[in-house]
Image (cartoon, rainbow, N blue to C red; front, side, top):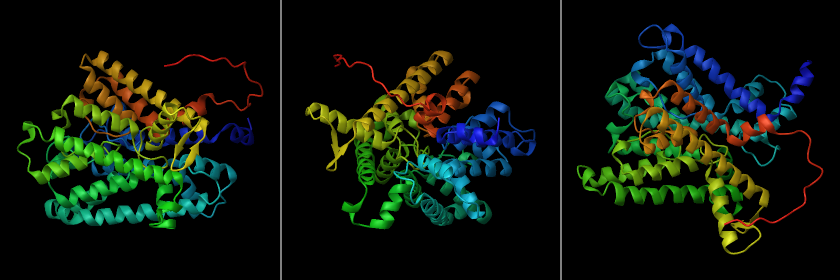
Length: 449
């Protein structure tokens, strides 16, 4: 088969799919090297595959504590995988080609457009350059802000390394941490009331999760909100609501209970805000999530499934999908033919796409949770929580992942991969036909509801 024929067969969806698979495979092999673990000998294939998938898919679920199990080399590999996964394999590839002086063809531009959910192909190379500059700037500022408390606690060299690691992990919404040196799998619980670390980490998570196109809108239009794309308006509005409403719930309903009476008012405010931010794909936590009520854990599950914004470092089915579904429901209630958002009509095919994404995520999340619950003989809630964390590429956990069996871990690997690459991308890569339909079946109504 000629190279030309192979290129024709590789659609944008397949290139994205193979790109992520290739990075995960390389990461797995590197993490299996003898010097990748603190105790020489290397990780098992399953542990290496799980962590490589989790890092590349910017999830944060782990089978071994990151700080104590992996060597410096292993941690660097994980950090590189997080950065590649956060930016996207295609963004990295286009950036390398651009800096090496190679011409960016139409195929590469089309793939890049799909990878970052850009509305058009024009200006895609310029946008790539802007994304890289912003990533370096934001992660650099985040690391500088984290250095003073990290250096004070861990010393100069280690403190700088920890600041850089957590800045990249937070911006990429990965949730990997190195605080296992204090207590294994403790995440950021030791910084519950630390103002600087809480604010910096939350800011990095939100900035990484609003999407590259929203950045571009903010850069071009500043405070002229009316000039923003409708998508940016939706993203900013829904993000604000999904941060505020859960934070109020956590403060008054969860941390207002007697179980949390040992927390000061300041700690409750920080904990409420942090859990609201991290639930939509960040993966850090500052409190023990297993101590939340089942209602609180269910709020987490819903937020994890919604996720961040399209074309961002975040996962989930995306807040724009949630907005379109709500707008469509309102249109049905009002007997309108189309959904409307910010004075603009939403095409029916967009509503169909949103409904399909919802069904895919719901089915996979439930199937994964039910399988883990049955396979491990555990209550359904922890299993559903872990499944939602995986497919939403969040990484928060109730602490059950390290103890899961092989088959359950494989299910989580598949869910993480599906969540990061995108359900529709995988479906299109596997099933999309090159031949458009030129005829239609007869139409007949069916009663629903």
